[in-house]
Length: 477
Image 1 (spheres, rainbow, N blue to C red):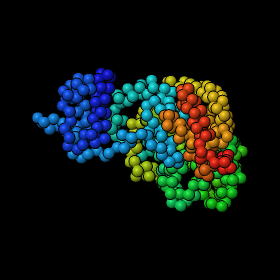
Image 2: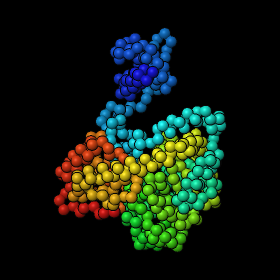
Image 3: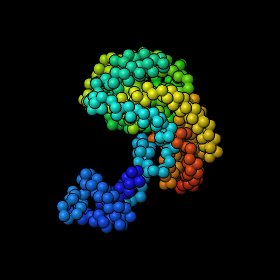
Image 4: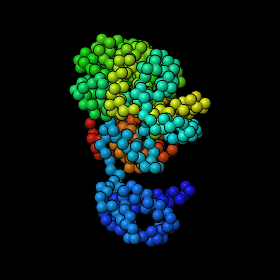
């Protein structure tokens, strides 16, 4: 069955490619079933099934007694399908685009997620089998506005372990951490408002904020959290509405917020009327829980968000927002307006995975495996001349300075030519002062080709004529 499916897909791909390249234009007659079966060395039944599926897609049409023809509404010409991979501008979406578009066999040491074989496949299959036997409402009905009650109760208990007190009714389920931030921005900011982020910060914070047409201002990051003096100065001068950050494990630097810095940031936020969004999606990677702004604040001025995509599945998307009740009510209205009932099926699946008896062992195994990956990857990067900014206490990221302060964008472009997706520093930096830095995901660096290609890319960047003599080196974040 599996082999037959593969053959069917191969036939379909061949026809799609010919249609996309216009070698089979609109209205053209497809090869006969017998002729194509002979050409592709498959059975006639395989071709029949492939043609039926292409017909269901609307790409081809059957004419009784005449054969199969390309549909008259031609598919758009796909230059990407017939040409080489094109480079794209290195901006806050560059790493996401390249990582998500990566072909099978490409390496992704710059991406922000774990390899599939690090995730709980056996637990996922058990959960899917169990969900297949669930009552019809779980499979077909909309979710309640706040989201699955049992999952919100589980999240409330988990937050309490981190010192964050949130009743289940103060928790709103979302499709992802990204949707959580989008809903918060819809509620709390208007175009032109000032929003603070760490510099460097997770690149998608910038992409989302740009979509909301706000003014983004970066605050320099230190190993203990944001630079407090710079934070206070920006608050006084720019009057920001929001501050978005990671506290427990900072992305991309791996830094951890200190209690002293947390208290000073909260005091400044209170003085200047700033709402803080604390993105805590890496919480399950911690060995020892770090301070949480939401715990010190009691969810008065801080909104806590999280998701399960990093440790369970990026395919079954599920996130949450914990906030004070009046904000949850307004956010729930926005959720209904934009997504109506939300993804109940994903919430049910997530809860089943969290309740699986192997879940705690899975997390323990992840932390141990990541610790080993740090121990293996760090010396290999140092051997190539890269210097980690800090040695993180947990997580998956190393934030590294390139040798001779090379341009990380040049290195990333050179590596991309060999099928390796890297994460150059300036995609994370609002001020564009991280041009010689690069983020590495240690979990995605197991293949030795990562370091072979990286070494060649560094040599190529070092020899690039664009590094003009006398040009000032990028500043450190």
